[in-house]
View 1 (cartoon, rainbow, N blue to C red):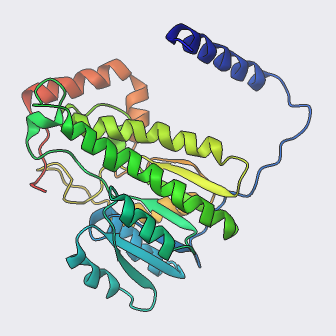
View 2: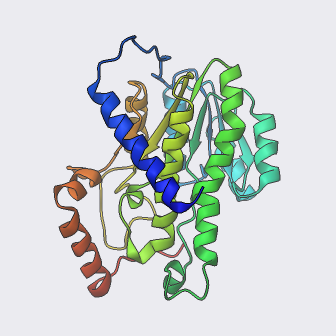
Length: 293
């Protein structure tokens, strides 16, 4: 199929969807219950040794999770994670880009009902390497894609079959507000997170008739080391986790937990061109910086 045929097919599909939305269904469609309270769940959190990931682990324990597999790439962090609750926390080494480690963890944690894909790579510490034209090559964007898009997809592929055997579950992909627009100081990161947003939508479509809740979490403005230098917010990782868990208990699939109101999507939608212009002008006059990783 050539490019013209692909575009024509997409147009027909879009038109058919619009027509279907206007036409009453002749027979009601039944859907599995997608509400997911975290009490008594068995969760696996990637990148759980600090920030948003650690907030998820701590709140899962407070909300009565049966077991939490807390994973980290650095083995030195595992003892501290296990010490959070030795009876319920199972600390596992996991570099999400390491296929052998992914399979080993999936084999060990077959009882998982909640997968939180939180681990992420923010991009090179060298600013020029995080962009397209100034980069020496595109290796940084490839690494971002591997970590932030392909790895969560691979983990979902490994764990969703286990969840179905366990009666159902949920997959939370932590995408960040950077998936909604290009943050030019971190183009490689935004590119990978935008791709991950579409990947998540694809997973949600594929599992629509199954008891699997697939959630897009567009996180913004959480008090972590990734916050821009000079910025201050009162929205903690625990606040973030609580808001997310409240929403998935209601079966919501597209979340915008944030310290600011309106949320990022609402701010963009108010005037997309003006929003982008402000981002570009700031990039050239006062670029965002974060603390060294």
